[in-house]
Image 1 (cartoon, rainbow, N blue to C red):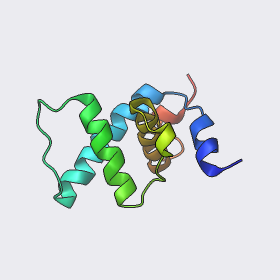
Image 2 (image 1 turned 180 degrees about the horizontal axis):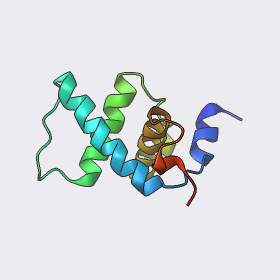
Image 3 (image 1 turned 30 degrees about the vertical axis):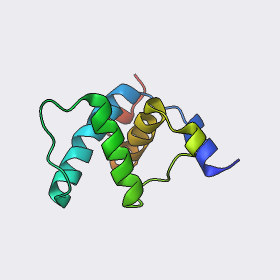
Length: 96
């Protein structure tokens, strides 16, 4: 099975919480890099897409295949990325 397919099928225990944390950490990363300044009016979907594209550009995550590119898939990749950044005993990684 290809790595992209495996990542697509990986289930996360608390994907919504991980996505929220991924956006928070991703925004800090992007602003520290000096490539963007997020506004309060930026939508959730705009943040997800921008962060996904930045992480792909910086080669921190593998890009999705063009046919798999969607808001939901980008959000999932962002959640997977942050899950790998967190310590193994982090509350967002535990089954509830």
